[in-house]
Length: 265
Ligand code: KIV
Image 1 (cartoon, rainbow, N blue to C red):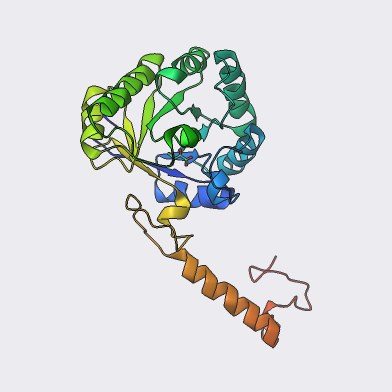
Image 2 (cartoon, rainbow, N blue to C red; image 1 turned 90 degrees about the vertical axis):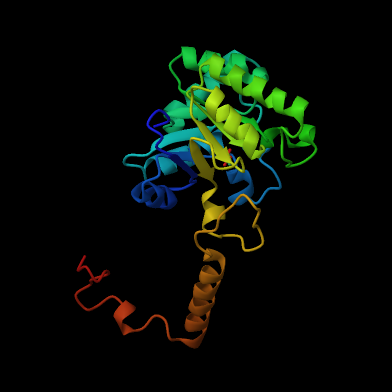
C-alpha cells in the first residue's frame, strides 16, 4: 500500500461490537491499543494494563474481524526486561489474543526485543515519538522531536525499529515536517497520530473519533460523530420510560406463542 500510495487506515477497537463495525467500514488494521487502560478502564495512563487484559480484549476483537489485520499492543513491562521476555509475551498475544502482529513502543532501546519477535515469525509494529508508556520519563503527554537534536533522536529510533525488522511504524505526536521526512526515509509504512498529513496511514482511538468523551477534544482528533450526547439522550429516555411505566409496551412482551423476537424466534 505504501508503494501504491494507498493510505492505510488503522483504528483501535477493544470489543467485538466495535471491531465488527470498524471491519465492515473498511479499516485496514485494527489495533487493540493499551489506550484501553484510559478509555475502557478509566485510568490516567496506560501503565497498569496487563498482558492478560490485552489478550482478553484481543480475543473479543478478533471475533469481530472478517478482513482487517489485527495488531495487539504489548503492555508496559511485558517486553522491557529482555528479548526473551518480549518473545514469550508476544507469543502469548498471538496464541491467547489472536494477534496477527504485536506493537512495541520505543526505538533503539526496543530493537533487540523487536528483533527477537520478528526472528520467531511474529510481525511487529514499532511506535516512536510520544510513547505513552514512558509518560513519566517524558514529563507528560507531550509532542516529541521538536528541535534539531530531538528530531534526530526520533529519526535514529525509527531507523532502529526498521532495522530490527518491524513491518510498520506508528509515529505519535511529532511535528508534521519530521513525519514527512520519515515517510520518505523509511521503506516501511508510517502510520501517524498527531503527525501531520504525509504519513502512509493514520490511526485514531475509536472512542475519540466517535466522540465518546465530550470533554476530550485534542487538536489531532477529528470527530466523525458526537456519540456522548446521543447516548446520554437515549439513556435518559430509557430511564424516563421505565420510571413512567411506558416501557415495556405490549409489543415488547413475550406473546402467547412464546416468541421473544419479532423475527419469530
Ligand atoms: O494504545 C493505542 O491506542 C495506541 C495508538 C494511539 C497508536 O498506541
